[in-house]
Length: 302
Image 1 (cartoon, rainbow, N blue to C red):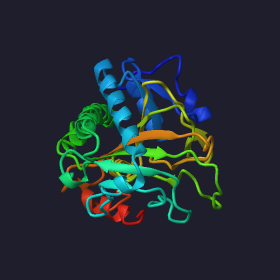
Image 2 (image 1 turned 60 degrees about the vertical axis):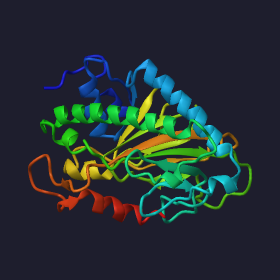
Image 3 (image 1 turned 180 degrees about the vertical axis):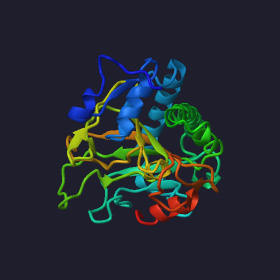
Image 4 (image 1 turned 45 degrees about the vertical axis):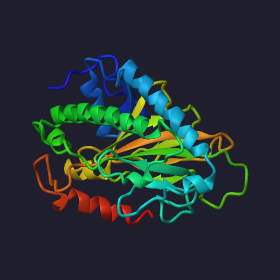
């Protein structure tokens, strides 16, 4: 039984805004359930400790130094499609295959399967700070999935399926731009995420991230200092037989003359996990192995 917040109730369901949820609130489970059965997004506060926040800020400083390196240096660590790791230049990716290339550069990394050759050697603290960011994100992931298990009454199914996850962390730099843009070209085109959940650190307060609700209306995602965005991925919508909603989002060109940074942490289950209906009732999807699903989706973006 979820505790109902008498002050909030289902207010945000009516206006379809992106809620900011205090994870220490006694009503956190209610707010999480309401958010993810409707708009599929929320911003969490009180999600990590002050020490962890300081560690993340050290990583963000190091990450910015990487993006300031000259292009030839960054291209020494190129994106590898078979691992989904490494550096991608501006225009490498379009997450919306029907639109022009995205206006961003990025670096994907991981603490389990990252080839040593892809770790930049020009910055002494880069690898250590990157690995610490993953440790913090993985810890928060298990906390959130535990809350989902409680909401779904699924025991420890989600937590157990992510004890050896196939996660990928990405830092993104959206360069300031004042030139010509093609029709429908955005910082990141309209898309939904592929995996279980995505955690997103909005590193600076430059706006642009928008979410489409189930009625087709686009809403800005609020920036909260020390807040962490969490959204449902397509795999979890499938896993919950459409109970939790994976919704489309994009980064539009508002304030494109200003630099924007973010860090998404893409969460996927342990390879070999079979994704099948957790909720009972008639199955809306055929069972599928989690890594096969991820590889199929990634192949459509690069």
